[in-house]
Amino acid sequence: MLRTLFVLLTLATASAHAANPAPASPDFAEMDRQFRTMLEARRVPGAAWAIVREGRIVHAAGHGVRSLDDQRAVTPETAFRVASVSKTFAAQLTGQLVSEGALHWNDPVRRYVPEFTLARPEHAQRLTLEHLLGQSAGIVPNAYDNLLNAGRSLDQILPQFGRVEPMCPPGECYTYQNVLFSLVEPAIEASTGRSYPELLRERVFQPLQMQQASVGFDEFMASDNRAAPHVKVNRWRWVPTEVNENYYRVAPAAGVNASALDLGQWLIANMGYRPDVVHPELVRDLTRKRVYTAREMRRKGWRDLLNAAHYGLGWRIYSIDGHDLVTHSGWVRGFVAQIGYSREHDTGLALLLNAESGAINDLSIHFWEQIMTRPPHFRDQSTARSSDNRTTAAKTAAVVSPD
Image 1 (cartoon, helix red, strand yellow):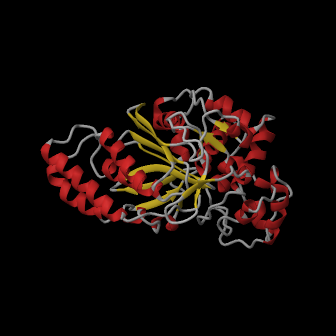
Image 2 (cartoon, rainbow, N blue to C red):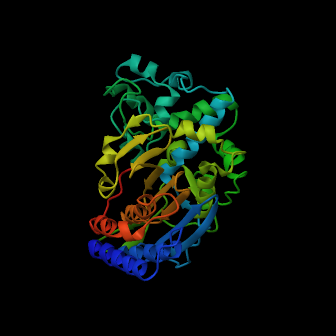
């Protein structure tokens, strides 16, 4: 069904281009209509998105309802859980403290969490903050996420790492983590004497006017305009479920809540338009390609689009048609999220869904394929249209990778 939908959308777009020459910038209103068509095809309960271009939010919208139980509409101001998109905020805050000298990228993790160890203690001693945020700790990916899912506390989980054998030396291979990533929190709090949520609010959320942004379960539940999580009980039926507290226990990895408009402001700052809050030199450091991520090259849907994929510090960097897409996705029970931006095309996209649906990838791929397979700010549709249509029509449904 989804293949047919992609073909129909492509043919409709091609017909529109044939009748009307392409404008200098993409038709975001048309993309909005295409997003809604794709969401309706998947029966996704609710979604919100924001499109950023040249330093401002040029389009933002909500679709569907916050919860199938009460039918209140989603708006661009509705708060969602952003899951692993939280890692981008943790990297920014850590980078700020590094630039101020309060922390250093090569600080040993054991300086702040002395009880942490691995089956080879010397490996644990070599792990640094950079290894944590760069997803290159060198141990089995997603270590003890199963215990997080089971509701265990960090105090219960951390001793289990003493059984874990390394896979590679620190910094030499990509090994995605949530529990380990969160160990940056005690480093931040020890170096500042302030709480992690307090610092994010003071240094990022407030100056960027991210009005719905917060950290933690209590803050999310206190919001008057928040989306409810939904899970699928059969092929087509979504049902609301309880907000799960588990991944809030690893706040740097998955504890942020935000609206589409909030994430739009976050993208604007990372694209260089708020150097008073997010310094471009720090952004360049965080998005430097540090470790190759072969797993992302196999990611369904994306694998047909990517030339290369790397991890920086809290950010992924995809190479598409010779250009970099700085991005991150997230997934916790009942929610998925994805943000990304292209410096060269001066465009960014934030997507939030209140259901664990692969539609998040369909929407993002559909958007970035249209943006990044054209030269910055323009494209000769007469020469590029036929090859683009073949590429778009070949896309199939994508599954959400655990993040």
